[in-house]
Image 1 (cartoon, rainbow, N blue to C red):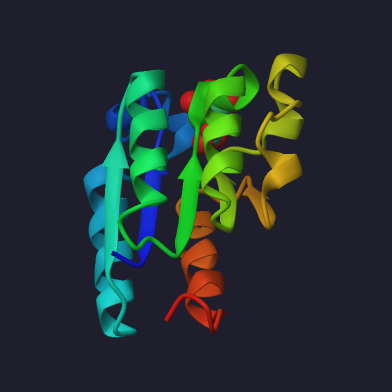
Image 2 (tube, rainbow, N blue to C red):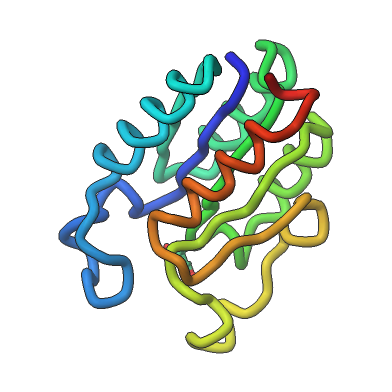
Length: 146
Ligand code: DQA
């Protein structure tokens, strides 16, 4: 598995969850689009969503052993709280891009800080599902991924 996409809590509700903030696309649509684009480029992509911090940590740890070369992650609310997810990302030492559908810097102040950004290769926020597409495009441009 070359590219892993990790979605944090409540992103399974995309489409119906606060559409004025997060848009109308469902997570299934976003994942299907990313899978197709990865396939077209000859890469393999797997998506994983969980509402549970430990499950996200376990999946990131597994990525350190299963041949994953790159992670695209939207940690959702855990962005602002989870030292555990940050530590898992640091432990596997895989390059990753942090994605947020909304512009977290235009929102409540508690969303302005990310525990992940310092370790990320890059951060994309505010561009809706296009942010995932651009993160994938970046991953596919790396020699160490394809
Ligand atoms: C989010 C922003 C977070 O602040 C929020 O908790 C989410 C989604 C985004 O994609 O805009 O659940 O990560």
